[in-house]
Length: 137
Image 1 (cartoon, rainbow, N blue to C red):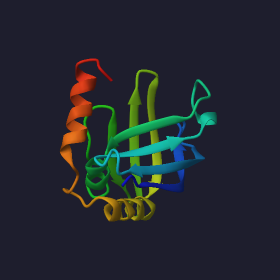
Image 2 (cartoon, helix red, strand yellow):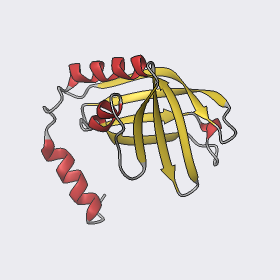
Image 3 (cartoon, rainbow, N blue to C red):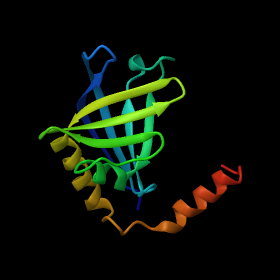
Image 4 (tube, rainbow, N blue to C red):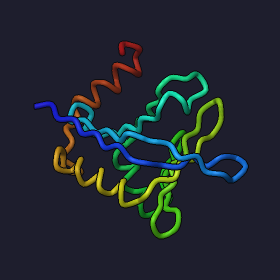
């Protein structure tokens, strides 16, 4: 059975001049892609005025709530006692977004009711990964 979760939350985009821009973000999780979480940003925040979705490992989000985590395009780390920073790297630049850690933990706990950590079926993710690697996706 397919189950999807969505959780709207507030966040703050940290600008290069150290200002913060409030931005709504939708956190998504799906049993169809149990290893991943999706952070959906509104169109008005992107350079091309289209909704932006960052997809990365649920385990990375979990790990990054307590200690710096990530390699490559997504990094997550604690920021003070109540916040978490997510850093997204793309050819166009780097975006740093501050979330309330409690909101992210709540989202993760909701996702665990759909698929327990470590209980993700690996076969579908492996098939998708191999298809993408070999250009069939």
